[in-house]
Length: 473
Image 1 (tube, rainbow, N blue to C red):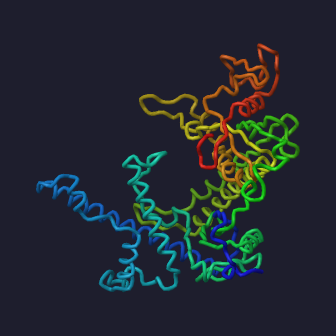
Image 2 (tube, one colour):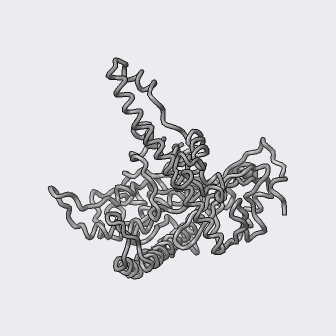
Image 3 (cartoon, rainbow, N blue to C red):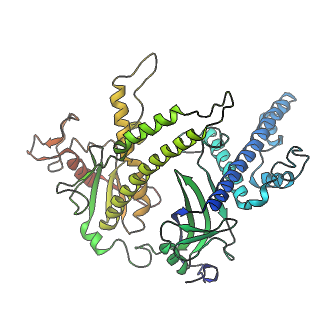
């Protein structure tokens, strides 16, 4: 097996960064060390955020004072104290961590730092920097998408335990030990539930491990290893564009839904039925009874109370772990099913055409307010739950990054295009089409087809290719 530290890398070759995710199987001692690193990263984030909030409040007072003395607001903003960035926060942490003057009760603000890898702290400082930058950019109107709120402190038990470690790529301390073990600094060699063969082969081709992010989801710890590796994507060096099989298959349209998880413009053997419909497994609905029962059990236990300072009981902790485990099982089942579908489509066709869905708008609550209460709130709540269980946003995300891997592309149809009302045979469009009408019958040419399959064929005809950078061609 090739040592990644001794691999010769051609700096002129095309490279990419790819993450390899593994489920860990740590010993109880290693699990305690992983938890300690996650707590340290959470503490570092809170420490950096507290420094930023204090500096921001001082900055506001100084700007108001300087403005009262006759300075212009622009001059006052430049003269006032600035918010400390991650390097400045790290310097303060280094000076105060063992200094009794900073916290005489504990002999410093962080006397337990010696057992933790330093990158767990620095990654927390950087994450606080990024959260603060996102908030300021959103306030200034420079950030696209939803408005980002002010960063909040991370409360233990309320956030996902996670941390990130880096290393010197020339002297790697994050590396594989065979196919079933991963070595990390300060943690040791941790056994993997699955194989790391794909990552080992990438390292043998000249890949370099950049970092590893460990996080706890449900009852398991996961490691996501970021590798800078040569880009061997089809269409880059090995061949031009998609394969011959993909070219012969051409384009396929996909219409996402809830009755059927997806409708395809043409049947795909092994993936859909003879009409082109992919059955919706409804993972959340199948597990709903277990989830409700576990949630009720947890509600009957003595949980934490922030107002009275009540600590959670051990029975409540076990009930919460049981509920979290079921929720994680549903998440993994949903993601695995979508991975199977998206990989099959990406490897079988040159173009995958989908609709530009507004998932946030589709799942918006119908509850309304006191002045204008909503109607059919219970039915809309069930529909929202079904849409989120189908995960159309995750389907689109997986296609966006998988299609470049396999030489195919994504084509997007406008969300306002009348794909359901238009006949895919003659192009005639209906003025109205009730949702209860599941079979499309054209009044012009007499074409009869499943409603969703007809929409998928129209999506395949109307979609516009999208380049890997996100823009349309």
